[in-house]
Amino acid sequence: MASQPVSPAERKQILRVIFISLLLDLISFTFILPLFPKLLEFYRNLESADASSKSVLNRILQGLNAYKQSFSRPINDRYDIVLLGGSLGSLFSLLQAIASPFIGSLSDRYGRRTALLWSMAGNTASVALWVAATDFRTFLASRVVGGLSEGNVQLATAIAADISDEKQRGSTMALVGACFSIAFTFGPALGAALANVETVASNPFATAAGFSLVLIVVETLYLYLYLPETLPSARSSELSNTSSSKPRTPAKTQTRTNSYLLLNSTHFIFILFFSGMEFSLPFMTYDLFAYTSAQTGKLLGFMGLLASILQGGVTRKLHPLRAMQLGVVSCAASLFILGRLSTEAGLWTAASLLAITTSTVVTGLNTLSSFEAAESERGEKLGNHRSWGQAGRALGPLLFCTLYWWAGREVAYAIGAAGMLGVCGLVFGALKAPPVTLSSR
Image (cartoon, rainbow, N blue to C red; front, side):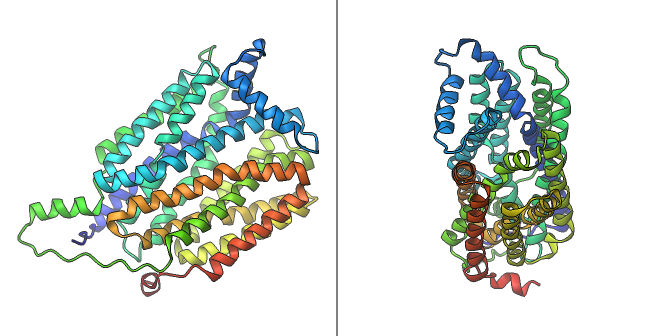
């Protein structure tokens, strides 16, 4: 049975709930990003008193030091913490790659709302562990729990697809993408400010963690009170129970334009190169221009602000395939510039191009993926799609930074640009616009 259309008033209400809840979630998530260096330094200093101990952190640091010593070029000790943070980021992404398909499948079976509330329970536990993390082992546990339970983004994407027809799909997905850009513009700055307020001596970051926990709890209550179920089969059952005299319309036959192997592979390869470049930016800005963390944060904030403007004013009006084409070309150009730049003007030019990429590619991919999924499998397919992207994010920083230190900046970014040209080949030569998206414009 085909799903019943969502009324304009109900769609507007659900979109508002998605936007506010996802913004709360992502701001909470980004709190920790600028804190990683000092946070991990705190745990390292805490456990360095007994360097011979077999603590989890000391074992990780020993492994990272062995990895660092394998490079032909020496790596400044300043990057020990950066490498540790990158390793934790890769772990989080790997856990997301494992969990995302299961979360998506559960949302198809039990409903988006139910799956999202269970995901929020895991997020709450994760942030609560961070609040209580007076040692590295507890902090690591919080990252593991968070990696396995974070499902807000993929479920928000599925909900956005549930309540949007072909004409509305692209602009709705752009709204989800705009949440990312806004959160990454303001969340890190707010987290850094809260880190300066010390309330618990045994955990100097408890204030930021506590505020993050408040946001997560508020988000959970907000979702519980205001988010209705959007799973098409559940909505159809509710409507059929209240108006059984109405004839049922048969479900549409799903005709696929792009195979999921192609969409997922494109997602994986793009994120592999993009996330590697993204993680290497602090290395490069320090090496070339001696940027401080504050200066690098200003650069990233500029990218987030520009991306949010583009999401609201440009991406939502473009066909998803055209948006992707614009984004991957911009990314390839930026990588070429980063490999050869010698001035700060070149750096900010490359950052502007990367903001275009951030505002277009993943949003376009998610939109195309949602068109290819039948209503009954939308959560599973979008979960698998996210899983491939998270696998790329787990591998990208490790592979790209290894190349950066073994072969140098010029070679690393040249290979990255060549890889992105390969992605351009897939986007321009292999991906096709679903016919329904053409007829709706």
